[in-house]
Length: 262
Image 1: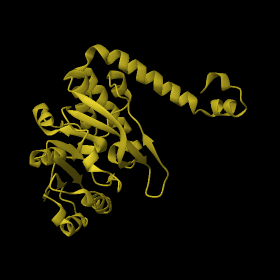
Image 2: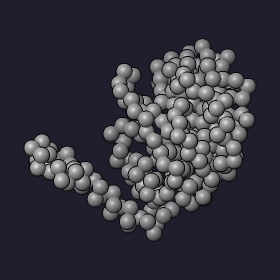
Image 3: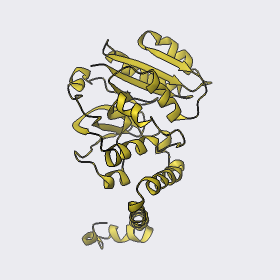
């Protein structure tokens, strides 16, 4: 079974080098590697050329954003499944792609757990995912594209990623795939990749836009859930602010709120 690993990059030469070097040892005749660069002006192209013997296809040209680039990679892919490991993220050294391939059978999506890391030398943790997915899960979280194998034909038939969205198109695809299209899926309780929490969607200044895109998507595709979703997220935001307020932190410090478990 052939797998297409796709990396998109824009002006992140250091991250791109780290990503390519993590993928290169795993490349075989059953794993093709595609790099889509958005006309970077740093030394990203030099990095790509240095590793050209490991790359099945690459291009550097202007695009309309990360999801436009991801769709370009999809168009060039020939594997039965695609996996997006974008610039800066890693496939771990001990990843066994022969073993990973054994989990890819009939399902449209096969998702694994993932290692999360905030920086180069920071502590990491394993983010785990449930076996059963539903609307409530997607209202709060998303599947990690760095650890989700998607059947190529399924993603093409869906129409690829929504290029009108700047941050949330991968989330929009997965919620629709599971809750609307009812595509088949499977969870594997192993991890093989590392996601660095400094990507565009993880930056605090982008949380507002991501929230707006998710809210708009739910209002359009899940109107019956929209009012409940909005009320729930607003209450959750109020609880978060309360939990970290100065007065509550003081009461927790003196043990007054132990019974509330805040």
